Image (cartoon, rainbow, N blue to C red; front, side):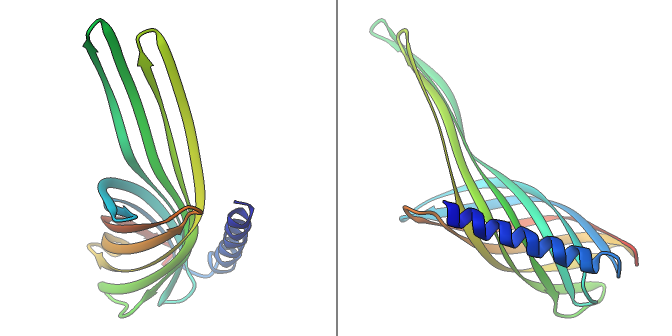
Amino acid sequence: MSSTRSVAAVAVVILGFALSQTAFAGELEFAGFGGGTHLRADGEGTTKGVVGGRIGASASKRVLVFGEYSYAPLAGFSGSLAGGGTAVASDLNANLMDFSGGVHVNLAPGRVAPYVLGALGVGRLSASGTATVGTTTASFHGSDSALGASGGIGLRYFVGRNWGIQPEFRYTRYFFDRAGLNDFRFAGGLFFRFGE
């Protein structure tokens, strides 16, 4: 756990330094996105929605340095059952949050600009819930953080001079202690550029 925090701290410092060195020189980009993510671990998989946002700064015409946050609600269940004179009720919530930083490398800058990306960050899984049987209630809360490494491809399509749409596919591997988690994400969104 402490090694994950150390790697995350180093990644944040590097990203902050890169942004401070490039922000004064060129364009800033803000983006919001939504889509779907397919998570697989130990042969089991689930597909859920994902939303997030990104801020970046151009290091050159071809390279964008960025920081990003995304959120995927993995489970939400509330229910109750009564039978044989005993009432049973449960409530479960879980989610995956990702904090990452990396680079987009434009392959062909222009109105239609395909890119490849690489990123490093931290994924945080958390879950909480309660269960009530009769008059007895038990609750739990747990969380775990892990280093995540990502690679992917995307496309910026400029609808206007400074804004456009951006579909993207990304694969992330989270290195949790007990088992790794694979995240396959496809998302689309809007981006806005300032400072051109």
